[in-house]
Image (cartoon, rainbow, N blue to C red; front, side):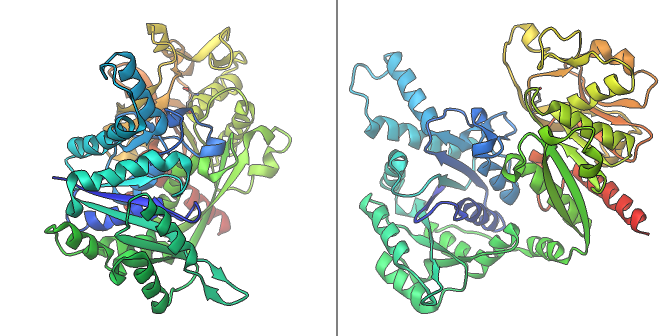
Length: 533
Ligand code: GLN
């Protein structure tokens, strides 16, 4: 039977509880246990896919095509396990399920209530995650902060879980903040005590407390917290600010949090081996070279492109370099300022996106990369726009466009194929196959011909127009054979002009950088080095 870890947060948001949860996952995985993670988000939106990246950061996509909160990206990067639709649960999803059932009469006329109907549905997601993943340990992070009204049904459900499956099969980890007051030069434990009291008033007593702090927490303060919050002293763990996210599992390992958890569950587990992870972190710290990458997107914001941000770092670290990532709002890019904005960068990336706004600026950037032989990486919308830009400016078809911008587009080289088959608004989500042509740059990066990558798009290249690209520098290097969909393109006679219809960033891991990011960063670094010679 699976064991359940529930991770909550108190005092303030942005404590890094998602990273702590993922780090615990990594430690348990490295003790030979199979780990699965899920996130409970108390907001009412049913589908994180519809939320604005401006407010909520990127939409992460799983293998099975679930559109989720960006925290799942962190989980996957840390535990290197592919998650699923059971990993993403929102209040909206839970209520929708219960109300649907009620509408169908499945409650037989009973009064439908938060307890037990909503809480039972929440618990069902825990059990389903266990059943489908066959994991030894399910780690569930509850979004928000203890005390939020909207989190209450989730807290009630996880409280019941201990009653349902027993003390030794459940573990509560609470994250708090220990602020430093510079006037008195003291760290303060009171907010933690209050937050734990609040949790206890809801019937949950934490087994482990993780204290986020700017500086080292003295033993006497830890003892105070242990006493007042009713936890063992070994279960009072500090999480000091780190320069690199990926150091956090190592900090937690030093405090033997994994031992405490394994003991609590009465599990047999291998000794902890973090040698590969330690080597990776040492590598990160050793980076001597630097490379600058400019992301030309709709939102000049790191969180909106979080997986790309991380994937660029993973690839740079692999090449013993650090990467400086600049975000430019594509709407501000035009032919007059493009030189000033992009002439100094080592690589240009145009990420996924929707709608016409900013497409013009993105195409100006793509043209600049193409003409100035600056390494270029186009992702999803970035591939579609690369094809339009090429048709317009190289092949001489000013009318080339996408039906995403105008349904009456005279030359729809990017079009809706799926919806024409009667599936309006159907997104192509999740893993699909792609077959790569031998001898191409992309094949050179992957070194295999058949790959599977995650998708999230509605429009695609319209194969009718393939002939206009014949005998040009544009190469269609990867195809989904099943549905004859162009998946990757690249330019000959350019050091690195590569674009793909899928989202490679979702599969990059700190210890397994993605081949396309590796190729892009390597070329950008090499060209920078030759320039400085
Ligand atoms: N807007 C484009 C489409 O729907 C690209 C989507 C994306 O970049 N994720 O096909």
